[in-house]
Length: 286
Image (tube, rainbow, N blue to C red; front, side, top):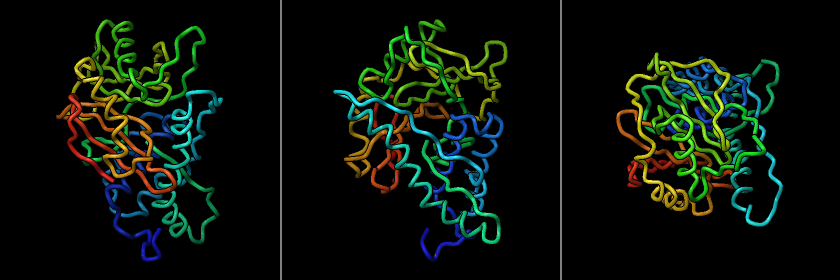
């Protein structure tokens, strides 16, 4: 935090994005339940000061990155895993100082960290309403790599094979798994989460409510080749050619879009690229 910043300093859009990313990871590893996640993301998006953002993540533990055994051809995969620590540092720079200042006189807090929020979203919020909780891999199922070429096609094919259609309320792509939110057939305003690591597993997290303005979309309408191309070009388009795409959130909040989140590396921050389903870039935000 800049010496001139205080807990009362006005928050920027990127501060809110980073806080939502931190909340997403806390939700993914079970620190927050679905209702807490939704409430905190909404509060982060409407936060006016750094103190308000810091208070939302004060008691969260840092995420634990997945371990990957190095082998030939896994360099990019390892870099994606290491980006968790990079985004953690980015959030700590923006928010950690505010926590330290605002907690003066309180008992010391453990260091915070983190990356990957949106209700009636402020443009650029990154959060996902769906559960990205722990998934137990089936050793008999082919591993998925949703952020590598052909990854989205594998996820979409998996949706069709499991559910008989490719409709989703929200779709999140991570390096080694995907998470889909789908409406309950008999209660379309209730969303249930499914994790995909080669097979679909329903999350144990309770159903959540559909956010106002969010519509179901057909994942088969996404240009998979265009997404594959954007996954390669997104860091460069954001001015960080050495950066890494950490995750993609796909939704229709009035406009069907894909948000590609990029860690710039070396504690240089992060940003996102918003694109239409045909791959055309709508906005880049650093």
